[in-house]
Image 1 (cartoon, rainbow over the protein chains, first blue to last red):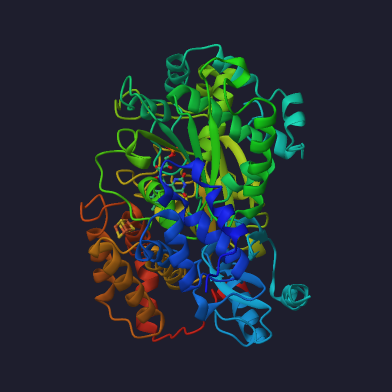
Image 2: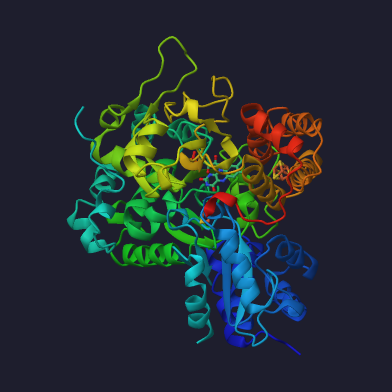
Length: 159
Length: 446
Ligand SMILES: Cc1cc2nc3c(=O)[nH]c(=O)nc-3n(C[C@H](O)[C@H](O)[C@H](O)COP(=O)(O)O)c2cc1C
Ligand code: SF4
Ligand code: FES
């Protein structure tokens, strides 16, 4: 059963003219697929490989290098919340925010809340250090998420 | 001395609109006009003359790097713009792209003209979604206005396409050849050099990799001239022919235990003390600084006694008294007197163990060993000889000792060596005290 819709395949192909090699479309393709399916299933790896004239092993090799991509067994929840544990954040309570988020959602970093709404991750410095402790919501930085703001943040993400 | 007027942050401090129209109203794309009236070689010469040194961490002279491209190459030649900005505690590239994207884009277009690139890839770390969208908007506006595409601003034969390439959360993609491998769709394993990218880079073609802030400086060098750029900073020491000087404005990031973490622009050569006290609002909670990270965590530490060190290319380095690795990204992080250096070093070792790409055994294993040893010390199981082992591992890994492919390993070893050298007594007394730390928190956050 193919998992990539025609529309998604067309989106991937629209990247071809940008690069002199099809392999260079690997990261854009993986991002497009994961954004839509919340993971990159094995079958999608085969289909991406087909589109890019690669072997599935080559696509998988690249994908597995980058911690951002998830396989079917580790599908993302609706929102992805990364709590920064980099030095600037840790110096201002970042580790406590991470611990608190995990405790409230009853998951370890990497896990998804039971209702499937929030996946929690630790992040290395996300480049919002002037607002430490900071978090990343999907791909958007949010400064000054101190312990007292965790409840409100989780409510916001569950909505 | 006259008060310094910010240049790179000029529009950002005024909260000016990032739109093309507003940027142009503020004099934007004037530098590009000037550049297009010159030959590419003359543009390169202006950048060489300005003595601009790369802001991405290594400090290599920017214009000189451009001259390393093979002469009369039939092309294609690529510009890869390094917006991976993952060195912990560094965030100036984000601010530039998010809040003044055309300033960055203008520098990219000028650089592409100078090096005869017809395609520029802007490699942005995934975490910078907002900056990515701001840059894409600026690129779209530029195409519509004839600033990108074919025969730019009517200049026959000057064509340029700019594409954003999003990263996927790996620090090593900031290393220039790791970036290129990642762009090509592979794991970001840095390449053995030589060949350097200028000779054989992206898609095996000549490639220039430059940092965002470097290219923003290029914009102003073309607008105001090399002499203006050279009027700022720490001049080269005439007695030292190898000193290339530290010229121009620099974005300093200030984070950690200060009252007002921020990013400020100042001429290169400001002291850590001035940054912390004047611009960062002083150390928080009325405390004193115990240690200062001078340029991202790879650089090592300054002690409280070294707080008057100038932060420029010449005052920090392996052969200076402070022995830091270099200026790095000029990201200053303050650690207050109540914080345990054991905890700080644990945080840093954990980062490098996580981010080593695993290609070279000394780096892959060494970062793991260093983390394990610091963790063991933290948990109260340290032995006196552990400190010597840490120092030895720190000494053995990296390009400098010649055991690894890229500089990540030097950056991993440096804070370890410096922590043990400069804070040895604290580590020794921690080991002797029998203290055990199991929580992950850095205690002084309370
Ligand atoms: C491990 C490692 C990480 C790096 N990360 C970055 C980065 O995030 N951004 C950057 O501009 N340069 C980074 N660099 C430096 C680049 O390799 C390269 O020197 C720089 O992008 C060149 O641009 P510049 O000359 O304009 O500074 C890194 C280097 C190493 C060894
Ligand atoms: S030094 Fe480390 S990060 Fe660099 S190539 Fe070797 S293993 Fe990878
Ligand atoms: S350390 Fe958390 S954003 Fe930089």
